[in-house]
Amino acid sequence: MASAVKGLSSEAADLPRLPKLEDVDTRPPFILTYPELKLLGIAGVGFFLDAYDLFIINPVSTMLQYRLYGGHAPPPGLQGLLKAGANIGAVIGQFTFGYLADALGRKAIYGKELMLIIFATIMSLTVPTGVGGDYPMSASVSSDRSNLRKRGTMLAYIFANQGWGSLMGSVVFLIVLLCYKVPMNDHGETSKVDGVWRIVIGVSLVPAFGTLYQRLTLQESTRFTEAQRVANESNLELKVKDGESRVEKRVEPTHNKAQFAEFIHYFSEWRHAKVLIGTCMCWFLLDIAFYGVNLNQNVVLQEMGFDGKSGSTPWEKLYKLGIGSLIVTALGFVPGYYATVLAVEYVGRKKIQLMGFLMEALFLGILAAKFYTLNKVAFIVNFALLQFFFNFGANTFVKLYLLVAAMPEIHRS
Image (cartoon, rainbow, N blue to C red; front, top):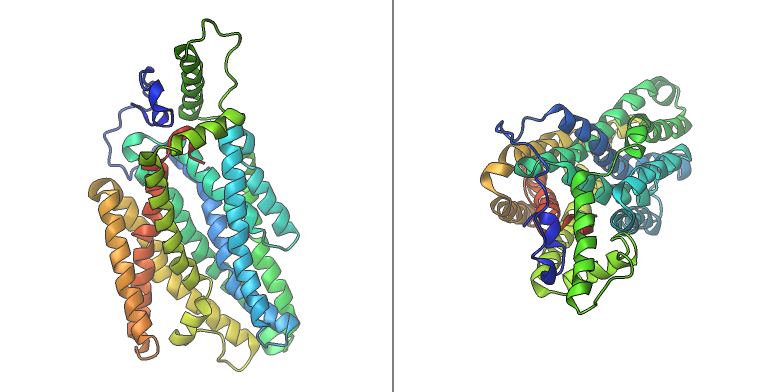
């Protein structure tokens, strides 16, 4: 039975299968066709902006110290609010846009989260609600359109844009900072840092505007449309089976209140609920470590000697901070995603996820036990390997398992 039918109640299991939605492709999974490359460009930009916006919080907050607090650290409560607010807003965006995408359809919602990100960027803000909303939207849109044989690879390519977003955040920060070297470093005009952080945030508008039209005009996928049709026919047939002699009208489409009722009914069965609960708990526990490390990266950079506290001028301190962020991202963050791209369809999702959790536990344990005693080279190697196995492991594969194995199309967002 095709994946869409899995979302229906067990009484509807005798419905016809969904039609075959992809052609046979015998090439290696990591070789993409033109339509797949186009989809990668449209959906991948969302994950690129997600990482770019979330991971420039560290350098932007450091720059604001010089603009608002004379180079001194802001109150701890304000730092915590800034970083926690990013995650809280992302959760709100995920719930809101995820539900609306299933209830109203991907076509009706896709692009609206990007409009929210654009509006926030123009206002020189970072609104994590739009960032969080893009997670379920881009992932489900990509999953709905992917060839079943290479769906894991396609989603891994999409998720890899998070690595590029983090990397480009560091690169853009350094380039803009170098452009301001003369006024900030030579002339001592520290207030110019205000222009640096505004430009760094504003650069994200380029890819956002570049894909907005494609998102707003993207048609509903065949697989999602067929899943809705089968769900509607299932509801109609179940009414007849319950003893109704005739039906006055067709049942309401899946995208209204019945969609939420079907969601509750589907996960009321323990065999479905345990998969969702298990996957969500793995993701929850992973993100405590993942975002705990990356949103507080200045602590790590301090041990590496790149925390921005050394240097004779504010510009030199900020430059060292940018170099440190670039080293951390380039060493482990990006390569881990592409190891996933190459291995996902050959090794298997479960094996790599288990390996990822074990390796993450190993390197976190080493860092926790020897955080202040490891020499600089050993510290960088351990941290780079931790970042590598975050992405060649649970950070990618929990999402893949949830999207590919755990969720039918009509509930996937």
